[in-house]
Image (cartoon, rainbow over all chains, first blue to last red; front, side, top):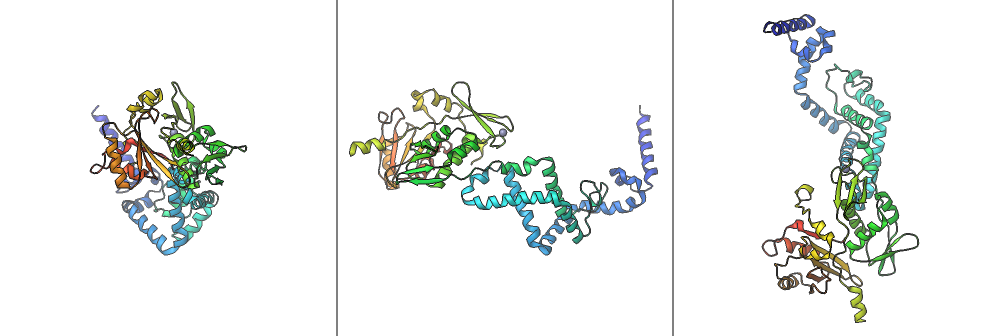
Length: 315
Length: 118
Ligand SMILES: [Zn+2]
């Protein structure tokens, strides 16, 4: 029992040394493939290790230099834009839509840009890599095939751009939901508000919005009326006529609250949820993405001042 | 402060509210609402200020501080929703600050206040 382990270690140690014929067996042991080309790897690997220690630094430096020096416009913006959009996408896209009033156009553009970028990465990723690689110290290679810089035992530090490309390529490939659809699938058009006469507001596209939120118009209407402290009716073409003067922004704010309270999943922030009447008069939201279930308050109007009646009484 | 987990949440609040209006007096939330009157004029209503506070005194202070008129709608008139303070104009933010303010206000918890409207 005592002898066998020592023997084994001896054997393994011997086998290593015999294979590698190098003074640094540990380094070679780390990457097994290097044993095929022992001499070269033995020479290169210490240097590579030195790089590996300072890998982050060197990459950072390169990245900074690159972005500053070379292609400020081209390089910096995709990286930044991609980052922002990625963050937004991780947010489930809700924030985007919630901020839509002011940022609507910009977010749309960036989303489209993002989508385009991703497509471009998918389609022309290799070309772009090669182009970028040609400029820097020849960072060529096929990511999928694992050649060039992407070779398994390649020790050359990979530049920031190809790594970023690789990240997005892998993201779109392996997890397309995260890459794009999170932001894409949940776009809610801004409410269209028209003024009817002096005292009424028409919320024209409520049907469309409700359809996208997967909620009944009655539920949304009840919430709107309760929050706005008013009442109204539905006209012939399913538009909502709200008593009182409301701006688009105001309706949007209420819709935003509605979405937070009655649409999004609090666990995974997915808007893909269903509202159902559960047992004992409680309403439950069930998430289609993660399956979590939470109860929501029934819509209550609460106190409302009797404006109309008083007016009638007075006049 | 908008982190969901940090909010104190009363799991029984909804159930109480749902069982009917008899429990409205115990309702833990304070609702601040806005209503449009004729034209550009608005009303702010505050429902559910705890009974331990003197509503009349509160109204007096508020009216002076916000420079607005207001009334108290008592329980009978508010149809079982308790005393409701009704103020002229959109005073929602001011009244919320007042309710939270520890020194010059009621020092209530922000989580118990629900501001409605746009
Ligand atoms: Zn979920």
